[in-house]
Image (cartoon, rainbow, N blue to C red; front, side, top):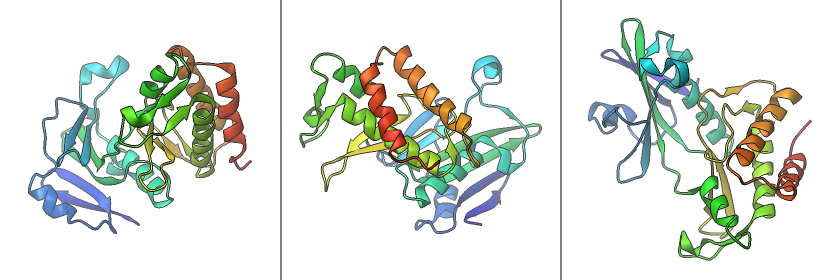
Length: 245
């Protein structure tokens, strides 16, 4: 197994055995500690991101408490496992550093720390692309000029989703907030990132699984007012050019 688990007091931590930093030493020194009143906190001079899991929807009254589960079935372990799998397959997502679960009787609380991805959410970029010409001068985001055109961008996102599906990963909530765009500092080309794999899973995907993800992305575009037939056609074209069926 690539993932090491270790019990420290009433907490179980987990990390990849090949990671090049001393996770246990950092954990014991409280390097990953922060207020657990927020879902997401930036740490270590904005090089790490800590996610503290909260209940949503009908179960939100439980706040950050989850009913007891074995470690490998907890929210943070399952997301860590998927991120670690994707990262080791050279997929553009955040590198997981450490996760841990704190047990308290019949409940547990969960945390996950990853390396930070310094990129812009797709919804932010689309909000600019839809304000006029459909082209964004990315010099407003960084020092180099990269122009993002809607059809080209959507085509590249479609290819990235197909790459994820080729690795047999189903995303639990594929929406425009969980897709980020950055610039490669060497090639100056766009990089499409997919994040937030909570409630996701790895299995032999069927066609209906893949189409469910595409439909979720489609609905996210429509809901936020960023849908265009021509753009979505390019998204599907990009997807079909990469997917293995």
